[in-house]
Length: 199
Image 1 (cartoon, rainbow, N blue to C red):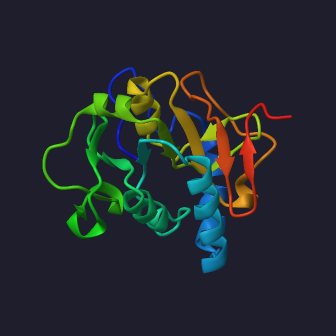
Image 2: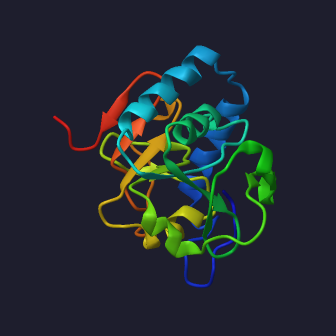
Image 3: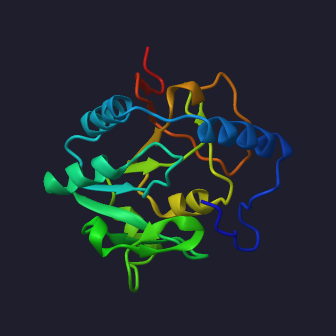
């Protein structure tokens, strides 16, 4: 999510190594058409991972990203409270009530209409599904480039679980990170669930 950072906060374009890897991964995503079965496998793994959470925060995926459509549908059907981003300079959140209610937002990302709940609403979430371009088995995450989530996560509870949805080929041995890049607790792909720190 490439939403400009505020002064003194993470912003896109500060690390050439990150930008180079993002370009490589974006090209691979553009050339890859995922099967419905693979997408469903990731969704099932994600639902199993966050089972029992009362409130889940989750991004609204763009076409090139791991699809969150069925994940969001099922969470709502299961009675889970779902927070989704409202993309402004300062991170904001709103309750997800259905895809029919969404409006066009920045960078082709849909979002709920009207005023949000504020950045502190993320503190309600037991579980946070993050977008990203790549990740490592020890929890490092390469974000999409704007620093929005790095800023937003400052409002999360310390015990909220952070999960990263990826295509399996995006699990890497190394990704470049900086001081503000917060780690994740697990990675979910169409093939596997990787719990950071698990033996």
